[in-house]
Length: 206
Image (cartoon, rainbow, N blue to C red; front, side):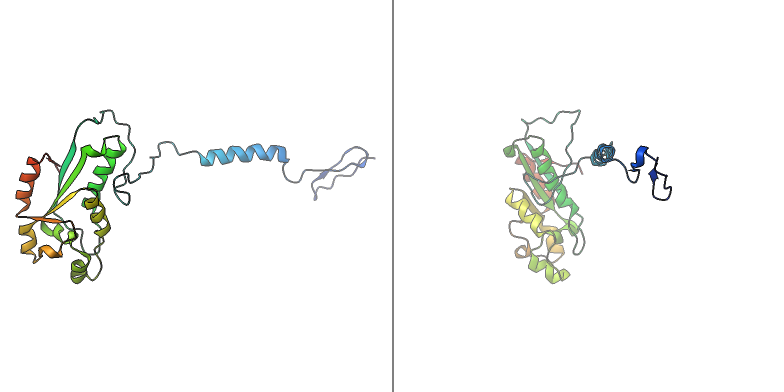
């Protein structure tokens, strides 16, 4: 005699009293579906940009995106660029302009340009003079340590010349000993650009 179906319990009638349950899904069906779902969710979204990463010259800052350009990046040229930084980042804020210099160094190193062919100089004037003060001098003015200190040290250690306009410094009451270690002072920003170009640096156009 066939077993009677129990609609509440999800059983169905089977021959000779054997009972089969439909509760849940057969594991043989569930496992492939689960794997398909897992792979779908793990796959990158179409059009999603790869992550930017710092290094290898400045490990802490200067993250850049990997790019496959249409215009080749020659690796037999000298990439020695002088940057102008004139606007300060404001109290207790990091300088995006200094980070741009780190990006320049890392970007070309990641693109395969030999390290000895990559160099940068930063000419600092205007309100940006405050961004290159020592921690002690910065703290006296703003009550906190200089948030740009670690990046400045990394840039200087990587061979970047950071040169302050003496006119901008003097007009703001900044003495040479108040600057971060490794930061130099020139007669003026204009003077600095003259001798940097004579040394082979190209001026960044913005």
